[in-house]
Each structure stands twice: as structure tokens, then as C-alpha cells.
Image 1 (cartoon, rainbow, N blue to C red):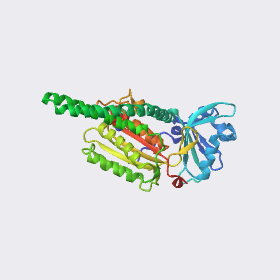
Image 2: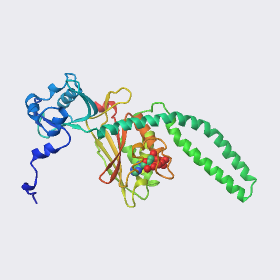
Image 3: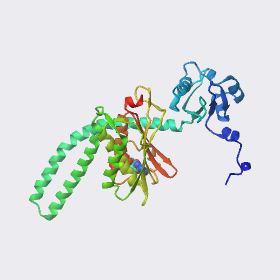
Length: 362
Ligand SMILES: Nc1ncnc2c1ncn2[C@@H]1O[C@H](COP(=O)(O)OP(=O)(O)OP(=O)(O)O)[C@@H](O)[C@H]1O
Ligand SMILES: [Mg+2]
């Protein structure tokens, strides 16, 4: 059944009601349309924008101008997170800039400025990786200092048990199992202590995910349904297979633990052209076109810890060490990517964004 036209608002009203500032640029660069939010954002009225254009608002070397030029020249959509936009006159704002091409309209661009929500998400992510790194020193020291005496304690308890009665052996058994638990914890922490850059090879992400899925199905995930939504044409990435397997295994384990009975865990991959983030350290913008999501139907993390999930020792589970996601953040960070936590339509989404192998990116 067709919707009754009378009940639909006019497209211009919808366009003007959109909270994000948006411009529609014609092929020669003219502003064909500007919505109300863009007037506030750019501090110029719509008629003036349409008449005088947008480029004059920014200095010649404005990154915004070069992004638009790049989108035009490269014929790709572009997203730049956390761009510092400087206006002529000195006003400065930070925003995410999304530039999309209009389908079937050569040269037409929709330019939109995103509120800071996503930007701060990325910032937070960078901070989390910093927190994970600061745990490296502590972890390395602890691992070294605790592991040796632990073997001594375990060995002594074993020897002791040979000369004890049943009650005594129960106690030495307790010592041994607790020592094993601490040792396993230290082993996990050692995942952080390796600060050497990982050995990278060209890897197929689907092969890695397939392996992780099989491991999960044979163990902690045997009672859960796994679904896949893959983009089979995804190019190779430059990665360390063992580290990535461990990271995705951690994500799958969390998803399974969070799943309600009968819930499914979905793995998706996609190619996101034009997504840029600031690289750590250099501040250069890098492309992270490879997206992998691990999605579950659980309730998500408790709000009190939701902003800190990637920090070490943050856990809402009684048996949890809180090291799973910290390791994910470290591994993904070592690969030059980012990982974020998101809630969407009643689902929990852990999104990993990774760069491509250099020759693939060209
Ligand atoms: N998919 C998810 N849904 C809901 N909460 C999650 C999800 N993934 C992680 N969390 C929350 O984040 C916390 C930290 O996760 P992390 O993997 O770092 O540690 P953990 O799972 O508690 O312990 P470990 O991984 O050592 O078993 C979890 O305790 C949980 O509260
Ligand atoms: Mg975990």
C-alpha cells in the first residue's frame, strides 16, 4: 500500500529538521542546498551560503577544503573523525566530517558534520589503549616476580602431600589448584608484556574468523548459534595471526557469556571506504577500511563500567579477570586499528577497524 502523501512532511522540512549540519554541493562546488543546522554551524544564512559558496569561509589550506577536493578527485566517500575546522576569523570547532557521493549524480556531494559523540568515542578508545599500555610495565614485573616462587610453592605442596593423610591432602590440593589459578592469570597478563612490534604477515580475515569460530564451537560456544555476514571480496590485511585469533576469541567469549538463552552471536565483515582516524603518536590520518563486528543479543555492559571496558581489570563478572578486552585493545592497537563498544537496537556490538596490507590499500 502506498503511503498517503498528505501525511508525509515535505522533504525540505525533513532536510531542515535534521540536527546534523548538511550541505549539498553541486559538481562545480556551488552550494545547492544547506539545511538549517548548517546555518548555525557555519554561522552564515542559507541564502548567503547558496549565493557566495562555502569555501570562502575557510582558509586556503583548510583540511576541509582538501577533503572535499579529495572526495571529488578520488571518487570515494570520505569520513574524517575529529577534524579541527578553522574558520576565517579564527573560530575553531572539532567535528567529524562525512562526505558522501550522490548515487547516479556524477560530481554531487553531500557534506555533513557529525556531533562530537563519535569523535569522543574514538578519543576514549585512544585513551583506553594508553591505559592498556601502562599496565604493560606492571604486568611484566609481576609475571617475572611471581612465577618463579609459584613453581616452588606448587612443588613443595606436591611433595608435602605424599606424607599427609586425606585431610592434609585436601589442603595441599587446594594450594595446588589456587597456585594453578594464579599462574593462569599471570600467563594471561604476559600477553601484555610483549612490547615488540608484532610479526606481521598477509592474512585473510575470514580464515582467522573461521578458525576462531571453530574453536568457540568446540568449547565455550557449543550451546550458541553463530551466524556470519561476510563481505567475501575483502582484501588481505597485514596482521599477526596468533594475536588476532586470541583477540577475536576474547570477543566471542564475551559475546557468548552475554548472550541470553537461545540468543545468537553474529560475526560480520565489511569494507568501509574512506574511514579515517588520527593515528596514535604521529597524528597523521590513517585509513581503517576493514570492519569486523561481533554482535550479541545480550543486555550490554553495566552502565557504570561501559566507558572503561578496555581498561585492564575492569569486569562485571564474578569469575572475570577483566583482561579479555584489554588484550583486544592492545592487539588491535598493535595492528594500527581501533576497537569500540556500541549498543544498537537491543544488540551489543564490538567493532574492530583495521588497516589493509599496504599494497592492498593502494
Ligand atoms: N558482549 C558484551 N556484552 C556485555 N558486556 C560485555 C561484553 N563484552 C564485555 N562486556 C563487559 O566487559 C567486562 C570486561 O570484559 P573482559 O573480557 O575484559 O573481562 P571479563 O570477560 O570480565 O574477564 P575474562 O575475559 O578474563 O574472562 C565484562 O566483565 C563485561 O561486563
Ligand atoms: Mg572476557
